[in-house]
Each structure stands twice: as C-alpha cells, then as structure tokens.
Image (cartoon, rainbow, N blue to C red):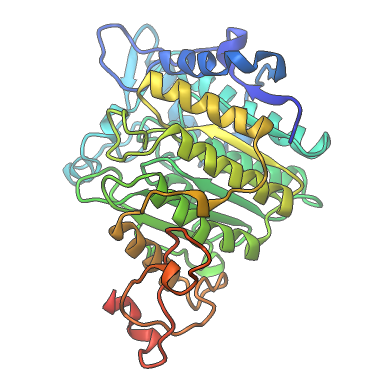
Length: 420
C-alpha cells in the first residue's frame, strides 16, 4: 500500500469553481467537495496534496471533438455573470423533443458558468498528474476530486452534469504519454448511472477495457448499458456492462466484481486501473435507487487494491463522479481512502453474509453469456443449464453467496440467453 495517498483537488488550492447560483436548486453543488474533504480530515497527515494543472485544448481533444471544445469555450463566454444551461444533444446544439424525452430531465440540468470550463480543465489536469505520479514514482494510489464529474460526457456532447470526460481523458493521456509502459487501461465504473460517455469514447478501442456496474431500469438515466452492448470492430468484447436491478445492494456489487470484473481484468491484464468512483448508489442518495453502504465500497476498493498490485504494479486511481448526499459522500470517501492506504490486498467474500438479489444474479449471468464467445470469454465455452442455483450447493466448503449456473450437458449453451 502507498504510505501517502495523493489527492488532486482544485478547491484545496483556491482554484476555479463550478458554482451554482443561490437561486438555482441543483444536486451537483460545491458543498459536495467540502463533504469529500471533511471525510479525508482524519487522514490529513498521510495525504499528498497536488495543485492541479489545467488540461490544454490539445489534451481535451484526445477525447472530445474540436467543435465540442470550441462550443464549451463559447458557452463559458456566454455565461459571463450568470450561467448557461447546455442542451442535451451537445454544446450549443439544438436538442430535439426526442432527445429531451430520452434524457428524462437529467441532461437538461447540465450547466456552465464563467469559470466552469476552467474547473473542468483542472479536474482533468489533476487526474493527469496522478497518472504521471503513478508511472514515474512507482506504485501509487490516488484520488482526483473531480467537479464537474465526467463519465456522461462523450466525444461531442456534455450531459448528465458532465462537461469533459475525466477518466477517458486520463486513459488516452496515459496511452499517449507512456506508450512503452501503458499499453492497456481498465476503467471500472461503479457509479449508479451508466457511463455512456466513456463507453462511446472506447466503443471501437481494444486498448481500453470499460467495465460498468449500474442501475438499468425503465426511466432511469441514461437508459443505456445493457449486457448486449459489447463494443464493435476492434473494440468488440472490450465493453462489459452489468445491468443491475433497482434496489441493488453491496452483495450484488461484490458478486458482480468477483464473477465479472476479476476474470475480465485477469484476462485483459491492464497496465493502469482507473475507477469512475460515483457514490450515488448509497442508500441515502437522493438521485440513486440502490441500497449500498460505505462498507461495501471499501470492500470493493480492497479487491481493486489486490488486482492493481497483481496486474499493474499498484497503479490504481479513483476519479470522483456522482454522490449527492453530503454526509453519505463524506463517510464513504473517507472509508475508501483509508482502505487505499491501509486495506489488505485480499477480500474474503466468503465472510459476507448478505444474499444478493436474484435479479442481480440474472444480470451477472446475462453479462457473462454476452461475452461467452468474445475475447474475454467470461464463460470459457462451458455449457450450462437454464436454472440459477446457489454456488454453495456444489462447493459446500465455501459458505458464501457466490452463485453459478450448474454444469448440465443436457442443455445447449446457445439457448442459455433466452432461457435466462
């Protein structure tokens, strides 16, 4: 474990802010970062504070189109003395009624003030600095307290509170800056909302494995991220979505990590592990519809610690995404940071007593089936029966809620997906 945890946050060095006018009610407010910093206070002596630099136009264009960057700059100028609400479709582009309906109001809440783009540049630049530190200073963990968040921003659009895509930019930056050391990047997104922007960026790219575990429910933003979304062309099989049900819990996420994330990571063997760390799956969150806890996210962080040490020299970096209940955000981030510093590399899932939701087990298997003949081969070509049964019926020595489909040669693997 790193003895000092690197933290990049513009607010700590009086950098530009992404302010919300007092008369405007908005979930993504500056107090979110105050809550994050409050949660880190007990670790103050073990933190290394970085003053974020600003990402340049050229760096932003590693992910975003030239027109998108120019549109954001025009919008910032137009927001002098106030704020600009960005359309759903893209910066200063006209959004159709269908676009607005598809966004279900979430995209219409993406705003920009006279300093917002500057804040976004520093959010991305701070993550770049963490990448540099992790490569040049040996094994290092770090957290970028990014605001505005980023995983909904695509190559030509800013939506879902996001202006630029911080983790996507960091992945492309690492691949370009350190081509001899960083050849493959794994992005793990645990935010309750699907990171459709990140998925779009790497849809055709085999150098970046995107694994997302999110709520997939009718009417829930952004209404994307089904198990069947797996990438195309060279990127076929390098997008992995676990579409979890409403009300999913720690046990659901932990089971998905063990059955999907771990085997995918071990087969992909990344040189850098980036996490889109949104905390809106917490039970208290006003925008989420899940029942996760700080302990659950700490357990996942412990697992990620182990994966990073095993596969990529300990290069594990987290970037803040969502999380809109200030107390829950503070406690959760504090525990995750403490785990990054002191947590054991191994996670004993067999000691976890909670049973995952049946619907989440189905979602996990839909993901594995979707990748059964793709590069990661998450089913290893096995033949399975139609019924889900507890794993501990077949391996009684492991008393855990880790579920698998039993081997049954009487059923055909090609029928599994429609059976389930």
